[in-house]
Length: 292
Image 1 (tube, rainbow, N blue to C red):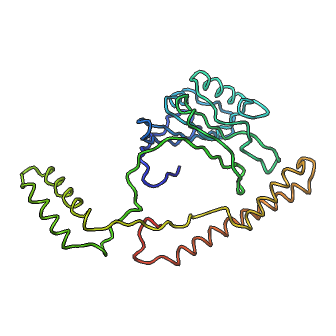
Image 2: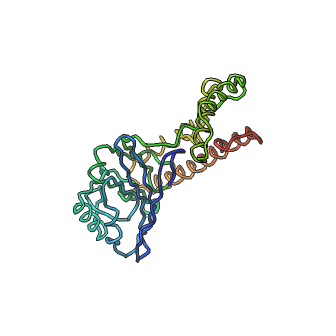
């Protein structure tokens, strides 16, 4: 699970599942707009014969919660053609807890071996979060699971903006010294160490506001973008093939699809390698950690 730098969050302990088949990752993100916490759980259950651990899952169905992942649970309620026991159990549990599925019926998984699709990747939210959510499947690069974009219209708390820095090269150190002396003279020294530390920090930052200018780091190029012309051509070609052929009855089309998927993966790896090489060329001993 990856987060944007500076997002205020806390890890949630893994759920205790005696069957040890249910895998989970959980975080709590602090919302600024609604002044509450949002729990996000990433779940996975392998496609075996074991039933869902409902006792372990039930503890996750709380207010301000979003559950997402692949539980290999099938039900027509979220777009599957067939149902299994795991899907029925999950549907019943969600109804009992008044949780809502964000899935709109779009299939999220394609089996390259059997050339079938299904809706295996689920997103479930509590009723208080549901009105602020949107959900859609986006173009995939080569994996059998399609990427899913889930947007929550929540403002979140952050530690601060690391893009802002002090420009010491343009600092007026004479003015800074004058301001700092004035600040320190306003606050007589006491024996309260914690208070003195706070006063000292406050004096430094207050003095720097008028003497040391602020600046912003230039935006760096993303590590990967899918706007490559070669990659877009392959994605368009694959989409056309999927829409214009019944792959179950056309062996040649299935072979062509596998070739295109292989080309997409190679192109994707090539773009990543090229971007990494370009980044390495710009690094030196002065490079800040924020660029790595």
